[in-house]
Length: 155
Image (cartoon, rainbow, N blue to C red):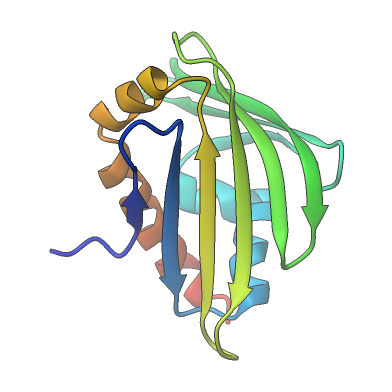
């Protein structure tokens, strides 16, 4: 099955660019990234904090079936323009990966479709390449598929 979420990772660069077109109006796609209740559903994680504003911060936590925390991430929002862009840092706690910088751009294609472009900048090409060895591509595609399914029911 073809992945709808595209990942472009050019050789010898510290970045990846992720693009996905959604059958969602721009406002709903943006809402999926800024409303904690919706983020929790499509990301399958608990939102401990999500301050959707410039200089806001966020923190997510994922637990296993026994309640043990298996993943925690956090960051700071540097730029926040509703329905247009979010610039934020992303840090995975208790991993060897350093903080990364994420530029999320939201674009209206038609009244009922929109596009997300994420540029993620890593500290080094080596860290970027390590990230790409993880089941990263499958995971983000599955998450975006859930986002499409869940948010389309909010129309």
